[in-house]
Length: 270
Image 1: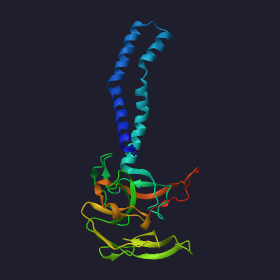
Image 2: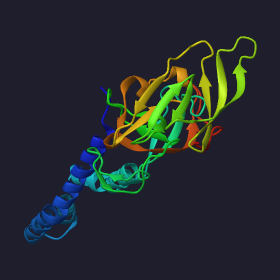
Image 3: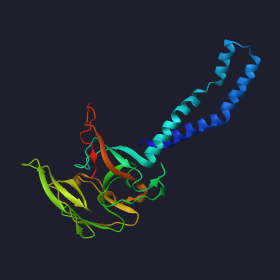
Image 4: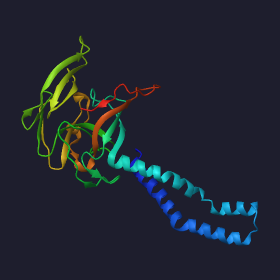
């Protein structure tokens, strides 16, 4: 079971905020009243000063809440409504995104949504074919990242490893075979709805012709590593309610193992 970090963040912000508010409205006044009463009974001197300081001192839970609440609130706003970091866990988007890439997801590109429940409260834009999008798929409660190849109303056909959108062929130009003598994969430059990017194809794996009509409120997703991607061809369309945001940039990369992260792959995502 994955950790629901947005829920933990919301709960942490709410609890620390409530403790801070309770202290400001009630507990602080009680401490001041107790200190005034004690001050009337104690004789002047160091003992009195120490006693008053102890009475006025914030309880540990209040002290921590006041310290953490602003930080949690800022992180909550940034992560929920502006940008969220995400690490690429699989190779389904190779060569556009590699395993170990840390990317930045624009959370407001497709509308402002409430954290945890995901309800859209403000329209900003809609996903377009060619976008690289982060979402929660219909079959698993995890973040996935794929490319949009079908928006509501589109008829998508996958034939000879080529995408057709509403009978319009999305151009692929051969780039290379890797390695040259006994290729394990072929590299093509694809133009998908005006977005140019590289894809990988398996030279030995055939596919049958498949076609889908995308219903209203749903999106069809595919990985750029076409023959090594679990995507909408296998588990169906993605609901607009499950959209997380648009992937816009790679900001860090870490190779597997005990290696330091680096910035060699920093770039905008196409």
